[in-house]
Figure 1 (spheres, rainbow, N blue to C red):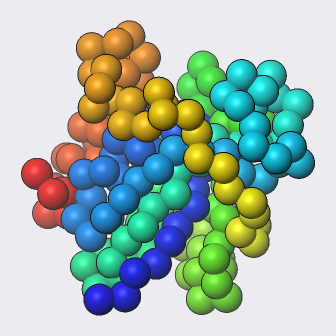
Figure 2 (figure 1 turned 120 degrees about the horizontal axis):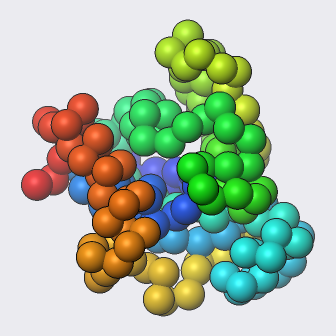
Amino acid sequence: MAIEIATLGGGCFWCLEAVYQELSGVQQVESGYSGGQLPNPTYAQVCEGSTGHAEVVRLTFDDTIVSYRQILEIFFIIHDPTTLNRQGNDCGSQYRSVIYYHSAQQKDTAQHVIKEMANVWDAPIVTELCPEQPYYKAEDCHQNYFRKHPEQGYCAFVVAPKLEKFRSIFAGKSKG
């Protein structure tokens, strides 16, 4: 077993968290903030858009079960990497598409996947590729959000469709 970490931002962290919690080989998914200048930001501060942080998920995964490449392929299917600082109605730099790599190998893999995805999308990919930045765990109320609140409006209308898309495209990769 080889345990790795991936840190990804693709809009609201609740969406990414819900999807990656179902992916075989992912051992832990945590919502948090990365890429900003303020230490220990709060959700309210990040939402103001002045801290520079992105909402991200940090995954701990077994790369003998799921590869970093597969994690990125899923990432590019479940969010729109062509919209700058926006996912659907969520607007602001905190919702940017970003990959924080943890090694030279992850950087190389991400560069290749981004290049391949440029042929899939009709518009240019705007996903940022950055070295790992200080990461701050989001407040407890944001952890496992979809699991705790599947009927909440945002979860029902935004998170659930992304989860269904993952389940339909990557049926063999789901824990369920």
